[in-house]
Length: 290
Ligand SMILES: *[C@@H]1O[C@H](CO)[C@@H](O)[C@H](O)[C@H]1NC(C)=O
Image (cartoon, rainbow, N blue to C red):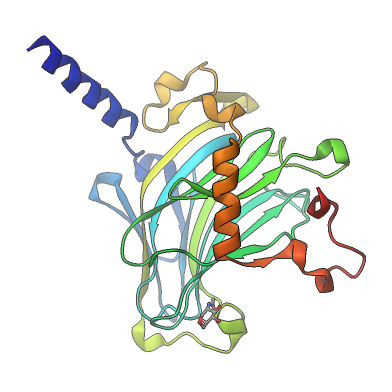
């Protein structure tokens, strides 16, 4: 009996640690004139796109490092021309940015997952992937682990990209400009699908993408510019007060996960700026040789 009570308690604790934050508390729908909606008591968010407009949202908080997870289900069917962007960004011309962008396709053809990292306003670090599943059928988790040493992109907890801090080699790394989380669904048929050759088919509109399961174990910039790090910001912000950042703050990929990432890159990466010298007549970016 006592043992059963203990295991029930353990399950309760484990599941409460996984409780997703409330979208109403964490985000503002910033554009789209009613095309973005928060539903299910804050547990689900949908963005839509039609011929008139797309839509988007942004986080209420600004983050300076964090492990940020979101589950997305992308536009199904003929999504050609549509782009679902999901990214962290600071403000201004020397901004930092960490990007996931999902480029739609005609029915039956694969999405492209496009990633990029901007430091001090400078991007051109694209890496693109195929996914190993249909991202429109179910929700999948897309995560950014951003700490002082690494920016690690993950898909269902599988690392696909690791942008390391190489400041000691003179390469800028995002570490002092707080970033907000943004997402939008918009029409980019001038470039997105098969290089812009395939246009959005508006007879399928409205297009819709869904979000749930947002979690941020992050350092949040509080009023007055102080940063507060804590577990699960938003789920229970109170417990975060004055707390130190979690394990994610010092996390890097162990050997097994590095090998996993290399394997994913060898099988699913379809573009890597580091292997595209034509883009860089002056020579490949320095981090490419490290
Ligand atoms: C769409 O499908 C075509 C054909 O399979 C592929 O070449 C292309 O990379 C896919 N993705 C995009 C975004 O165009």
